[in-house]
Image 1: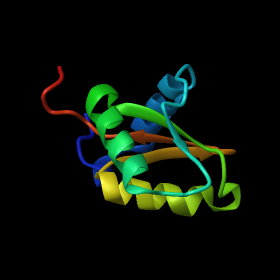
Image 2: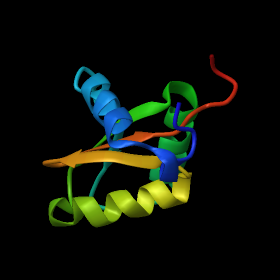
Image 3: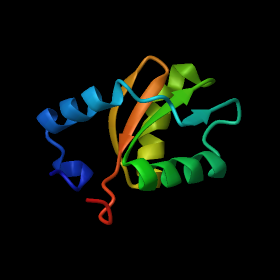
Image 4: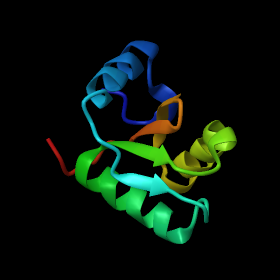
Length: 96
């Protein structure tokens, strides 16, 4: 289905949001903000899982802006932000 973030339909985005509800956050953004370590961790998680939940423990007033930056730096699509959590998706072409 939608391989590029610009091609993601609202229906597909809703399916991904639904799948993400049962996920636990695997990447945390702490008091240092978006560091190279956070970017690398999200990049690795996206490669392994495709759909990843990120929890913001700090910078809570900037969740949306920082999430957009993370999506750009990892080449992923920002599926949604809810509260202090963001969901990212990036298709792994090697996975079936």
